[in-house]
Length: 289
Ligand SMILES: [Fe+2]
Ligand SMILES: [Fe+2]
Image (cartoon, rainbow, N blue to C red; front, top):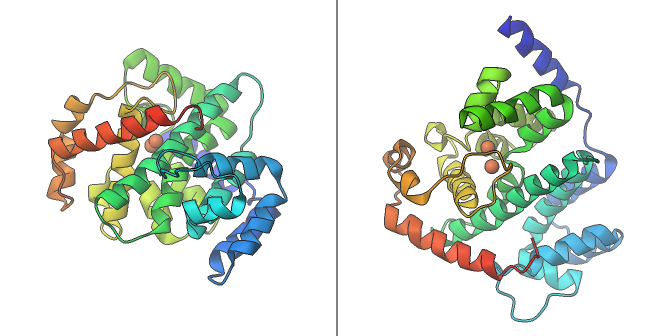
């Protein structure tokens, strides 16, 4: 029975169309190392809504700009060229999975979770002095894309998952396993594979709930993992129904132990300090996110 369900599920994912032409254009821009700031500026300025999203992102306290960033060119300098390309891709995906009606609020919350997570992932990368790696940024932006796929293409099952989370105070992953037999990180990774995303991004999305299992890109996966947890602790979950995580509880968790044992050294004090800084930055954010 479950096997049949899984097959149907895989087929559903396989039938998701490729991203529209604009994103192929963005993908080409991303692949082309020589893409200049001017080319990207022109691309963004063609679309007012997109331009506004980029400016909002650049004005986040996470970048600490002293003056308001009001031109796209400046926004690219503040955010970074590769990161802007990743943002463009994420915004295209957001548009691709756009929804209307009462689900709109949930979708907004979902993207807020993703945006905050990308800021925090960047912040953590800097804090741990990791080498600049734009795959971390894009992975943070789309780490939960599997949830959107489930919501959009398996809506009834997705509602049942949400209800299961609510009623049993279970984790999202457990509810997904129970109802679908597949989790959002598996669905997300499958879709990204289909869309020919880089291997590292697929791995980081796949392992964002258990980075210690990632043999190849463990450091990046751990950053996404921690960023996701801190995003939730700071109050930016994907869904209202999700169980709140407390910092003390996380520090004492088995997961924290596994992170350390896998070679990523981080203790409770460091987590608390990071969280404090992150919450200060988020508090300054005055509705930009
Ligand atoms: Fe997740
Ligand atoms: Fe998440």
